[in-house]
Image (cartoon, rainbow, N blue to C red):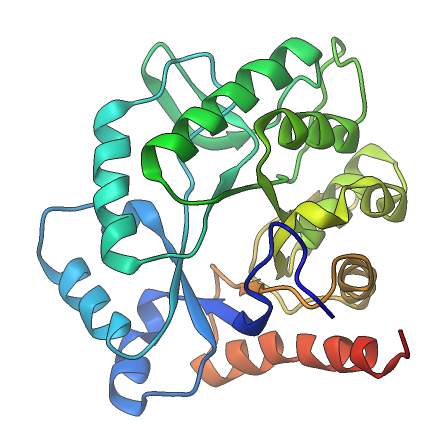
Length: 282
């Protein structure tokens, strides 16, 4: 199946996050992994152990950068010093694309260090898209924005979350990092049909997919990345690749992290859905 416009990386296969508990295993055992996703901010330093480790990883593996602090939806102007450090890392890793979240998280230079949901308004979409375009032009690398999990909504919203996502990526002319676990989490918390969301996004803009586990409480679901992926999320994943085609897929496991092999084997379950898709006649 041919790559869509924003996904020229259908051969990237299945990746996992590069996490501290697995460093020693990776360096000593050199396991076969399609690629690693790194959190950009963990390596935006002038030197030391993080960059030494990254150099060793880059000798053997492909790396894709994922950010957690661009806050495209904040009204603050882009932080130029942050962008300069990010661009230096982009050149070092040669990441084929860069992702960050469709959210806000800073006010007047003060950072919440959280991924806060947006008010789904046309004004917010216009501002957010402009900052994404400016970031892409400065970094000179394709950008994909990720849908976040949410636990509150704004009364001023003028559209649904998926309509807002569509509005932003069309205005910015960027890709989507489609997090199917976040869709599931938010659908439970806000009472919408996750498949309506999934069927409404522009499949031709899906550059990467995230899968993950979560924690379910009596009245809400929390996106904790500390469990295996549940079956309803896998079903969303199956529908996502049915629409977008084989897509670079990343398993997130960030708390109560088990052994490297357990995390990797969980990620590789995605291959069975890709094989099923490829077995269906065009």
